Length: 222
Image (tube, helix red, strand yellow):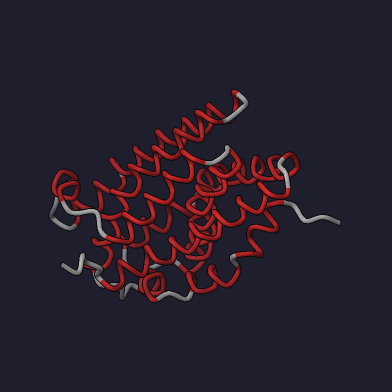
């Protein structure tokens, strides 16, 4: 029996996902030991990232062949911006800063590389390729949120972040995108399927790199 596209995609990144779950950034969220500066680094860069991720989702909406998918991706693009404006503003306030101050901070190397690859793929590739590129940010966050929610956190700030991605409302959105992915898997050619798997693998690795950059306090070298 042929595997579904989502089964093939997840199997291709099992080692990457294992490294994500084992990363000390996520461990620090659940045991409360993550340095505040590392979390602030993550929130600021995530604010930059989500603005371009919203653009990528808008391109997915523009390329979607069906009205339901156009509407869904357009709604998700709006939701990504709302998350950037709402949730991140709350976290930045906890650090004694503002969204305006965060927006003025530089987009750092990993964020720039991730968003550049993402936008190049969604603009230049097919609809299926675009979905493959944006999917890790949905799916990995849903799986991570689910795993971390089971552990919780003694830190109220980190617990709020975990609850956002472990929430059933977010999980249901991810299930919708996964169902679309499997429908596409039944329609696309083997060559296009290989491209989807490739893009999915690359952006999944960028997800690991994003957390790692925050953990290391990444800066531009010069």
